[in-house]
Picture 1 (cartoon, rainbow, N blue to C red):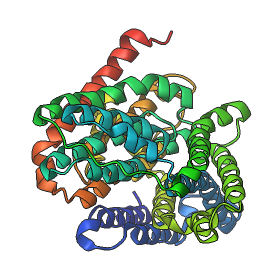
Picture 2 (cartoon, rainbow, N blue to C red):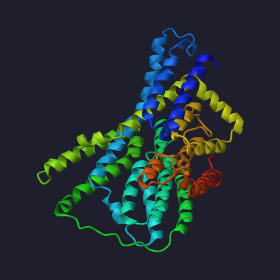
Picture 3 (cartoon, rainbow, N blue to C red):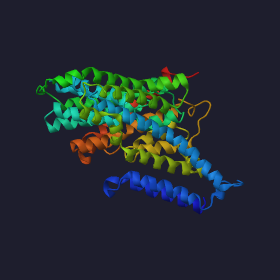
Picture 4 (spheres, rainbow, N blue to C red):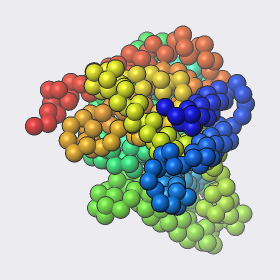
Length: 446
């Protein structure tokens, strides 16, 4: 291994460590990811001939490689930006009010199962981060006891991560694999849905033992005349936004165009619809301006988008120098080709460090094959989607959903580690066992 290769690896590991220690350094991980991206490619340019022997125009070759990787990365970024905007539009226009009504009950255990199922379903359609925020905000209105709320909040983390794992649009890592062509929408839903459901149901069965008795009936506020007037518009925006997200995989299947174009189609239709609504004389101008897409765009978390840009482009540098393919060969040798072991370990690691670079690294390590475990919808890629998504539930800092719930409900790392980690791990293993049974005895490929 050359000195230049070692220097690139050190730059990547140093940046990765700073990202993992964000809670201690208090430096936004997006800044570190961007610096890591530029540092890796700058070191690469010290002597590009080492990696492109025989190239006639080294500068043009490197620029072409960067532009190629940037184009692949952009498809994921535009997808995420469009999806985040759609969810923000639906949320700001009261589209999630129906969830509040569906959760109303006096039984603690009934509420637990309603929260689990709604979170699981919503995170598959939206994303696990947004779903967690919506569910915790509703939970605060329904449950007064802080001790009970911690149990419910922990289940929200588990259900959100499990729900996002089987959906092509539910988790960033699954979106990456779908955009990369490793998974198809139908394949991942058909074969990973049941394992993901098991990974949520098992922890819910265990956690319900800690909840007994009834809740106080929450107060129901009467809708104002203005809210009554806008109910139809809210319903249209909800169905257009959420239904549009569900239509994206269908659009991709019908047209074979990149998935981000389907997202932009839905965003454009939703944008047009809201413009027509808020140009109506019944809507106050001040209220309409606040809810227009042109205003809501400023609420999109651009730091997260830039973080993904930095990470994915830094990983692409490792791919160009051949480190990822070499690591993939080493892992195959150590595990004797056991993909359950490799992906299972990756899932556990994803509870400690961010799963986005882990999955990006795996996508660079292993090429898609025509047949076998590495083929499209092969065992490796489906297990990677499951393990990277569900594995983050084992620690409260292991996923974006966990981090945001930790902040909203003031859950301590120690409390979660002591009471919830083993429960999430049992569900994680049960889901992997379910997947093995499905692929071994039911979904047997000829």
